[in-house]
Length: 177
View 1 (cartoon, one colour):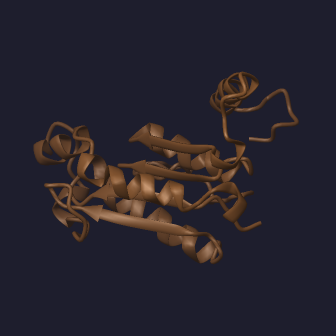
View 2 (tube, one colour; view 1 turned 90 degrees about the vertical axis):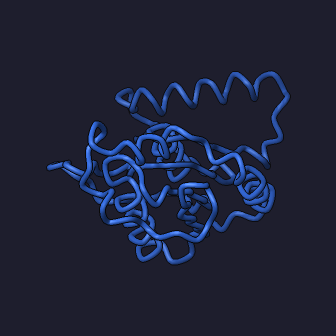
């Protein structure tokens, strides 16, 4: 993820290029460069935000841990080079233990980076806040977890305003250094 090397991760390089193209058009408020994503896109958004000081904040949905997969034998130690405020929403019952691994990742980040502004919401089946991860969903795979699949495939529209509020409240000028 070192931007000074020609071996830069291609996904990071692509995002850098896309952001650069939009910035070149002069239509971006550089104080409000935000990221969002869903599922693996949410994982990438968090990783990118944590290594890119120009990102003001990120708000994501149903993200697995960007540093380790549930069955990963080569997990990496989470790190961040930028204290980008993160908001994440997890389904209490989701596919492949995403709630458990995602919330464990955020607990780990909070311990490693105590100055990081982090908000984690766990959502019930109706996408209301206040649930906790359902242990029965953690070990189930995609084919054996129809409730988790339905939850994973449904965007939490009733939480849109909470996400937008989080982003508005975290412009780059408010980001801890």
